[in-house]
Image 1 (tube, rainbow, N blue to C red):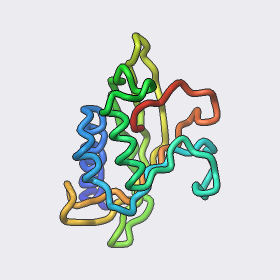
Image 2 (cartoon, helix red, strand yellow):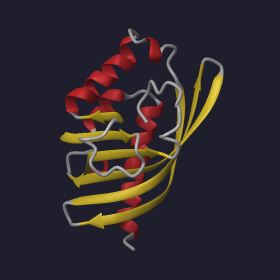
Image 3 (tube, rainbow, N blue to C red):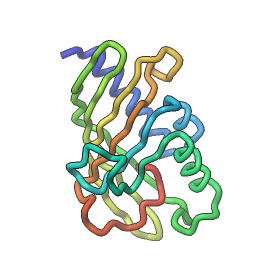
Image 4 (tube, helix red, strand yellow):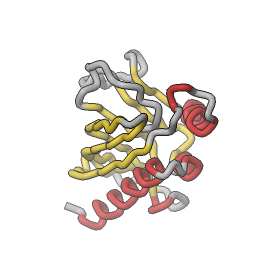
Amino acid sequence: MNTQLLAEVSAFLWREADLLDHCDYDNWLAQWREDGLYIVPIDPDATDFADRLNYAHDDHAMRVKRVARLVGGDSVSTQPVSRTVRSLSRFHILADDGQTVTVRAAQFLREFRKETLRDYTADVTYTLARDGSGEGGFKLIAKIVRLINSTDALHCIGYIL
């Protein structure tokens, strides 16, 4: 096990979670490569996301629009703004070809909105490009959030998982 790589990847992903929890969306967007995809599938076994219904299947333009909706105050589903805390653990390097690193982690997200506290648990798979210009030397190529209850009726998810 490459513990140095695991430490670098963990630090990058913890920073990504911190940016989202503190609504620092400009810096979050800057962590992505232009061709990156943010995906939240409904089908927990899906591998072809383009031909399936997803909660999110965002390219660069859609990520920018999602952020604009979150900060713009015009969307009923995002008002009042949710307060969130993410915890990431169980980092497992799935692949490392020298250019990209694929890692799977567990994410526990607590959301507080309208006097209600909710939990969302997910397996998250990240594909990271080694890129000296990114914080921590990486850029996000893909983030696939597989909610463990994705096939159940979910409450409004008016934030980025």
